[in-house]
Structure formats: C-alpha cells, structure tokens
View 1 (cartoon, rainbow, N blue to C red):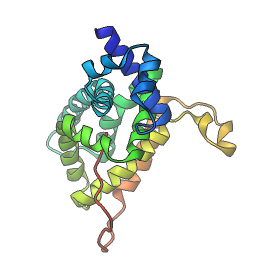
View 2 (cartoon, rainbow, N blue to C red):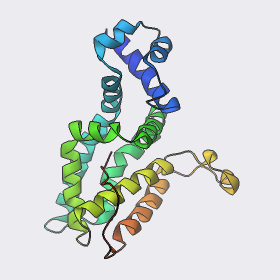
View 3 (cartoon, rainbow, N blue to C red):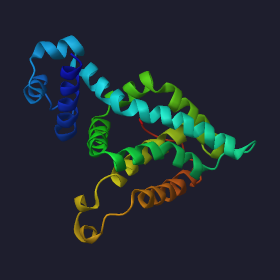
Length: 219
C-alpha cells in the first residue's frame, strides 16, 4: 500500500508541476502511476487532498528545519532582534539545500510556482498545516521591519515568493544573453536573493492606502 501511495504522489507531483493543478485530471495521474482510480480514492479521497499530500510530503521536513533555524537565529542574536538578512537566510536555507541535494526538489518548486499562480489552494494548505512556521516567522520579520504594517509585510512576502521561485530556476531557462551565464553555486544564488529581498522589504511605506485584495503568504 505504501508503494502504491508513493507512486501516486510521484506521478501527481510531476504532472501538477508540468501542467498545473486545474489542467491535470485524476485519470492522467492514474495512467502515469500505473494504478486504478480506486487507489487514489482509497489513499487520498479527492484531487484536492492529493495535492495537499504532495505539498506536505516535501514542505513538512523543510518547515520543521525552518523552526529549528529560527530558534538558533534568535539565540545567536541574544537579547537583540535578529537581522532581516539572518531571518531570510534561516527561512530560505532549507529550500536551497533541498534543491542542491535533490532534483526532485526542483520539480517541487515548479509545482509550488504553478499552484501559487492558480491562486487559491496553496495559501489554504499552508494555513492549515504550516501555521506555526508562518506565525513564528511573521512575528520575527515584523520585529526586524518595524516600519511595515502586517498587511504591507504580507504583500511584500507575496511578491518575494515569485523572486524565490525565479532564483531556483536553472539559468539555461532564461532568455537572451542570460543563456551565456554559467551555473552559479547554490550559496551564491542564495546570497544574491537575500540581498535583493532585503532591499525590497526595507523600502519605506508610502502614505497612500493599499488597494486591491489582501494577499496570503505561501511557503
């Protein structure tokens, strides 16, 4: 049963990453995994629950590591507030380490980018299963960024998600002159990203009120 469940998860992750959640049918997952439709209903009950299981399988261990790194970050800062750069490093390191160690993690990041673009499922999954991580890091980031309101921080974190996904894409996927770039060490990419995000988070707020719907942070 465990082998069947893993085959379904592997197939679903690949197809969701390639086609997106909406465009991927349960029948296509069944065909790719080499199982029958009853196996999906037995293990996961629904397509949405299957996506949830795919996300939890990869993101769960990374989020547990994030909490440990956050505690280490706070201990290292002693009574002071950890710097924005240290907090970003603690939050992003598990993702970059996973991508460095496993090609499967790259596929998972493609999946996250896909379902994030589709809009409504990823925030709900994150809120249901990773609330502790989101709350802990949001609290820490807001202390390091006292000039931001909670709503403005969520907007910037939402925009930062796109930058993270872009940073994890292999350079050869880019167009034009960027194709000539040689692959850079994961640590170098991480440090460039931290510098870029830090600048964006530190930009002073404007006095005008935000317009549009509120954003939910997904990790």
